[in-house]
Length: 140
Image 1 (tube, rainbow, N blue to C red):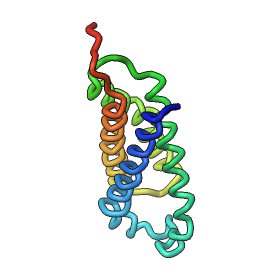
Image 2: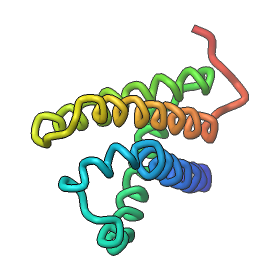
Image 3: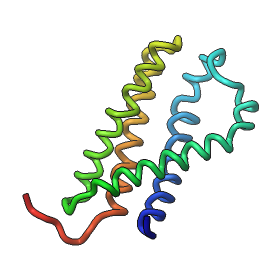
């Protein structure tokens, strides 16, 4: 772990936390309000903000750590998008499908969760790839 790793971790953490707020606190706010029986009240949820921060710190660190272990000397944007797709297929898509099976969530809300979070993860993949980009690119 070096300076690049920690800077990428910080960049991804900030982007992920802000992106999650935009997705879940803004774009899906009205959807969640209609399902208030499934969620904590906003005032109560604020008491758990340290856990939300901790979760984002852990996710961001793991996200960068996995990318750093597999980064190749290839064009960074394509590599970041490919990585984002892999993470979406590993986490975002299956987790929301599992939640849909066990929680009485409307299908439209679940679809929005998947699409919005997938877009966020693709952006995060691009960010980490940008942070790990190199000036030399191998062909082939």
